[in-house]
Image (cartoon, rainbow, N blue to C red; front, side, top):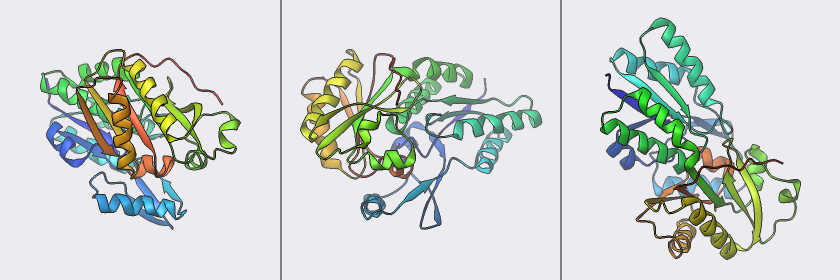
Length: 295
């Protein structure tokens, strides 16, 4: 059985230390501001995070791209030529075409290297939900599972990763086309907070709205408690330059659900460009997601 390398992408929002400890790599997407392009690195400082979201607060438009085909090709090729296999767990296919590009590259490489093991899995989620699946894959690898076995396992559990969060403004999601919601959600939302989940297709779905930040935290906490269904191992919360709000959400969830561990992380530049500053998202493992969002 060959060793294998686990890859996420710039959407997974796992920080440097977490990736290093778990042995997880990632392929980078790009983003642009004022026609200047940057690599969407997850190795950024708190100062860089604040600067990034301050640009958005000043109404700078940030545009994002999927992982370039050449990046996939050269990265996967290097792993294969080193005698290893590839497991790529992508962000949701509903949010990025990166998984399709990876699958295309895998077929091209297999034509040259017939014995190459390249497994591409659509996580059907983003941010630390995708990060959770990457960490689970690393645990399976550590226990001696093959790349193929691990890929099948991630496919089996991916819809049991539940997401629930809210944004400061729906405008960023609307511009990016990254949310399913009724037209009513895009009207006057002054003082109103949308509650957003990831649905069975991996879409962001604004399924209800509540009045005020405090009620939003209560709604998210109740959703996460129900979704966890007693699986209170680890709670993941990612935020877009609003750590104080993330801590308040953590406390609201822990007041009704006894999670053993809480991981707080920053939303990276790719997800951040779509959701905007002030976003908080909670993730947990539990019940299978069954809701399909419709506009």
